[in-house]
Image (cartoon, rainbow, N blue to C red; front, side, top):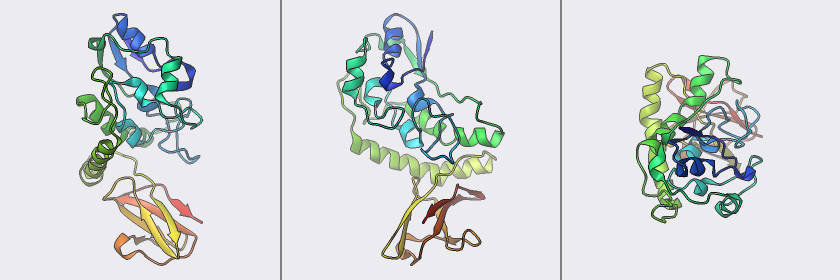
Length: 250
């Protein structure tokens, strides 16, 4: 058996999983670029984790993983520069999977060098583990496949992810909170346009709060009645008693 984890796109080693499977080994896909949860959610110095495989791995990236066409997952180098499937194919010695029956499943990994508490472990694991489970238990119709020749359908993937993100925010996050699991809440984004605050969250349905007094007080953001503000403004998302890291608009 083989654990196929080292797939750094620009290193020319992304074909190791196919090489193992084609040579008769039972293979578990544990691809570091998408399934290593000790990497940060965002390319931000405030985020915990390593960055030796990808610069970051957010929930959407894990959700977007396509096991049936590994090279189609190529998106960015370690430094964030773009890389294409064709570039990875050109560097690969083994270009196709001829023994798909030897691919046994998926695995996510999290290493503890940068983790110092149960809460840190839980926030690094959840909600990314839900995204990994989505890819492990069924094949979505938008996924690319070398066996059928199907290309990835970005439009259908976006629709599927939006449904998934809504389920996380409105169903699974309350369940996790009820069970005392320290899941990570995403940091909201925002801009001030003509004096009006426009904010959103990666997971629709989460409540966004804003502060205009450096966090002394917080108000609920309502997109339908967006407030007039002046910078600086702080933003955060909340779910029950949990709050996200604070972002700032200067």
